[in-house]
Amino acid sequence: MILNEMRCKFSKIKLKPFMSFGKMPMANGFLSKKDFHKEFFYNLEVGFNKKNYLFQVNDHPKSPHIFNNNYPFYTNKSRIMTSHFKKYFLWAKRNFLKRNSKIIEVGSNDGTFLKNFKKNGFQHLGFEPSSNVAKYSKKINKVNVWNKFFNEKNCKKLSKFKNSTDLICAANVISHIPNLKDMIRGIDILLSKKGVFIFEEPYLGSMFSKISYDQIYDAHIFIFSLHSVRSIFSEYDFDLIDALPQKTHGGSMRYVIARKGERKIKKSVTKLIKNEKKQCLDKISSCLKFKKNCLKSKSKFQNQIFSLKKSGKKIYGYAASAKSSTVLNFCRIDNKYIDYVVDSTKEKIGKYTPGTHIPIVSETFFRKNYPDIVILNSWNHKKEIISKEKKYVKMGGKFISHVK
Image (cartoon, rainbow, N blue to C red; front, side, top):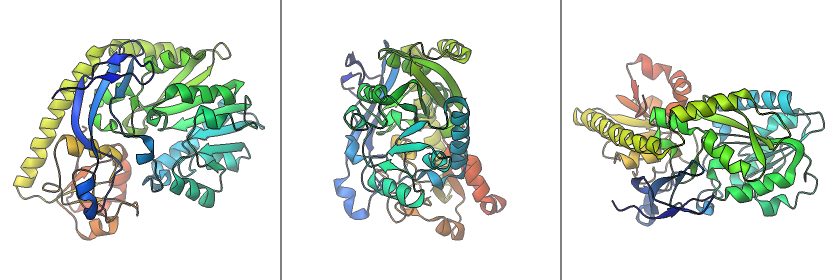
């Protein structure tokens, strides 16, 4: 396949993609049968900028196609993530907040994280571009939410938060923002002198070691490392002062950013940077190794599924996740091999998976019609899913995944 030219979305320098995952649909583009003929596809290519160490996708659909009025993801669907955000809040409160601190969350979704700040009396505001989850967060969690994108233009309008926000936080959303420079300028407008910007994202080192290429899809424009985060923020006089590995999303990193010289840089940053150098995360060689591993993983997973189907096994997928779209389309595992995909989100049930057109059914349907094999589409929630489906396991049901 001929790879297209691309430009780094941060520096604008020309890059050459090192890999293509082929034609992909919108990862969250769950659709009705009548819309199959007009489904949108794009070429999913990835590149690496050797100067700022930024791993990024090439062509991607514009954000209104992704964060629309019916964005089909609610954080509170996961008990583990709800618990994680409570612990995240307590950690942030203990380390960075005063009684009168102001807080802003970028991409507040259904308000699961933000409600912890509200309950503790903090002046808060969430930015959430998808109207359905923004409305839900205001109605159910009673949090203050602005149904807008977080950018420089909108940040300038927040006079009450200007240069007085002690914490700007985000989780699994910064990788979705194509214009990082604009986002950082917005942070600069709002953050207090000693304020911090804290964000969590799937970690490049974890993705490479697990060969979890399903982290790459249209909304995940970047996969960050400490090298890339430090390089990008240093251009705007910010320091990476701390970094804490997280178990969420199959391996994430929590980054803590502060104005240059205002806070001490923790020893953990130096230690993790050294580890990244050992893994060659600052070099294109690690990307080329990842490419080889992805192709091996694809072949192995295809052979496993094709063999199971040939032997007459009934196969379901569990969780109509965005990330599973990359795996199923890259491996060409469609409705000929998987009978149904099980999900608990009402907006997805009754629709079909993007590209592969597998019907999405409820958990109730699953429990009345057990298959022989279940593919864990959200493999990072394995413990939570198996705990929910103990009866299926007791009856001899088997869970498998492309990630070991």
